[in-house]
Image 1 (cartoon, rainbow, N blue to C red):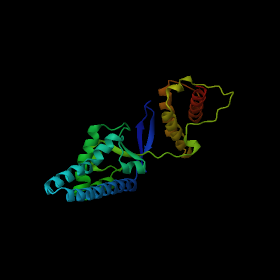
Image 2 (spheres, one colour):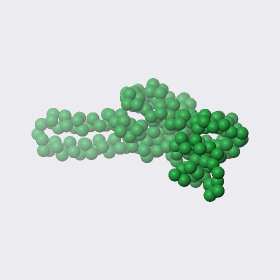
Image 3 (cartoon, rainbow, N blue to C red):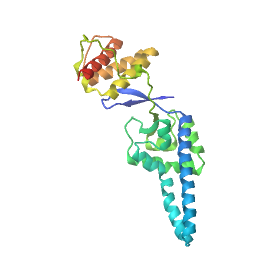
Length: 241
């Protein structure tokens, strides 16, 4: 997976994972299966109606009305479920803007209209080729709407939560950490651990500068010590509240 830099609510620049081509295809296949099941049910219903109603045009009109949700499926699902369809829910993915902010209704409308080119006219070949040759695995609709599909999967390891061991006699250093949210702190910790594991000191420095600017602090601590202190301070204050 590639990484996408986004901003949290406190403007802390962190990384989300862009989903792979395989995940996008599997999510689409789940949606396709749901639509086929729905259309099969509609076929059974209209067949039963045809036996009760002698006017074939009336039955045909009702059938087309019941099939409307199929045509607008991705549009209303994205609108109702914050950038997710049933397939995306299963795969734990969602559509967001390139800067990580939630997409708007006009964005979903562009994505829905571009499906005609990406998927239906050329049987998915255009969309697939666009995804293959895109660094962020975007189809043409994503390029037009300025969106990307990211992963919502959360690891369950304790090291990837916001929890930190804080002794009873611990003395916090930065009281302004309380302006951060749980989501911010979780993302800070994930980026911190990734940077340490890969010895990525540049990312560690950038993370430190972002956090310093956000909580308005200055410190002589080294980058690793500073971020570790911020995490412990946040846990100290939130556990006490």
